[in-house]
Amino acid sequence: MKKIAILSIVILLFSSFIVIFPDVSVKASDSIVYVDNSNIEGPWDGTQEHPFLKIQDGVNAASTDGVVYVLNGTYYENIVITKTIEIKGSSKGNVILDGSGSGNAVQVTADNVTIHYFTIKNSTYGIRLSSSSNNTIKDNTIRDTDYGIYLGDSSNNTIYHNNFINNAQNAYETENNTWDNGYSSGGNYWDDYTGEDTVYNITGGTSQDRYPLMDYINELPAPDFIFLPPAPTTQDTIQFTDKSIDSDGYITSWSWDFDDKNTSNQKNPTHRYADDGIYTVTLKVTDDLGVSANKSHGINVLNVGPTADLNYDPAVPTDLQNVSFTDESVDLDGYITSWSWDFGDGNTSKLKNPFHTYGDDGVYDVTLNVADDDGASAVIQKQITVLNVAPSVDFVYNPRTPTTNDIIQFLDISNDQDGTIVSWSWDLGDGTKSTEQSPPVHKYTYGGSYKASLTVTDNDGASNTITKNVKIAEEATIHEDYAGWIIILIVFLVIFVILIGAVFYIYKKYG
Image 1 (tube, rainbow, N blue to C red):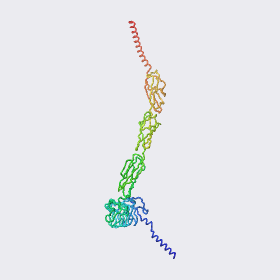
Image 2 (cartoon, helix red, strand yellow):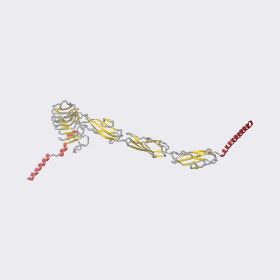
Image 3 (cartoon, one colour):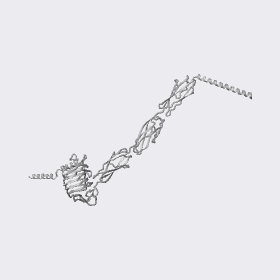
Image 4 (cartoon, rainbow, N blue to C red):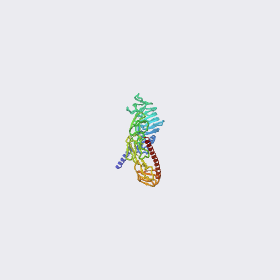
């Protein structure tokens, strides 16, 4: 019996423990419901596959005394609350309930409901309480409605630390409610409160906000931005993207200063820097109540180096021509400050546009290295083909009017300006050939015209040829010619003697 009694007591105590401490895991899964219309993962408790997309769905799913936690976003709904719950925005000002222009954005028919951290707007009634008591409405912004909050047949509700802005009627009640939390800073902001009275009278009843606030309950906007690419150059068009938030309102204007005397009032501007450097980009944002805040980011804009290029004229020069080299390099974000030429033959220049004459033909690698005002450099190399100039060929012979009896001397007077002549090839026109620079003396056997030619070749293998007609007279022809001159000379001498005799005769006769 004693064992049975002890066992009964243990069972009774265990049963009492279960009653006192119900299943915590089940309660936890029912106590909080998440709403997120952005379709991204959020901090929900893991008992649901996905959060609800609509607030009303979350409200319907929540258990009595549970919490509906609404993540940042804009929700176009008209919700009805018929159970005791807490409905809470994840951050003040960033959870917006838009009533789409009519009806009740929020209608409450239950007691002990808490609503906070919402921006409620654009409806006939922002929040409407119908026969609902002991509710707490705090830390909300209610704006752009016909009635910001309407309490019909509802009492003992506490409303404080809310902003009422741009509503046709900020508040209306039919019974008494509490419109502050009992402290000097615990009232609401009413945009139609001028401060002439020490209290703000609630229309429709006898209640007052004893501590109305002169300033909007406003969190400073939090300016922020990003830019792409993260390491831009002077040739990049940078995309600036605003990431600012206003926890209790919204951003109405943007003012960008790019630190290079350029500005923008766009939300997400683009900008391109003309020169490299470190710039401090400042974004100033202003919220819907005219409150501003600044945020600056340093941005390192990188230099784009120059692009090297060159040209030369003539396009196919010889080794006797003066080649004109021209710099055609560009620097898109500055200017070129120095030039270094290497002509490929051991000669260099620091001029921008130099001239150069090559001492010999060949293929040369011309290199140009340029540097810009930021110290960045670029190199280009091009090949230039320099041609050899063939030798100039010529010869003379003596005597100039040879006969078959004359011994003729041929003499080479050729020249190679860019090298040396290394070989000669003579053809004297009568079958006689020679490879000497000046062949041995030569005598033609027969009279006539002979084509004497000389071909010379220089040290680069270039050749040139000249041909001259050499006229050889027969010896007889030459004697007949002499006989004529002899006769003339004899006649001249006879006449000369006669004249001398005549002079002598006259002198003797006439003394």
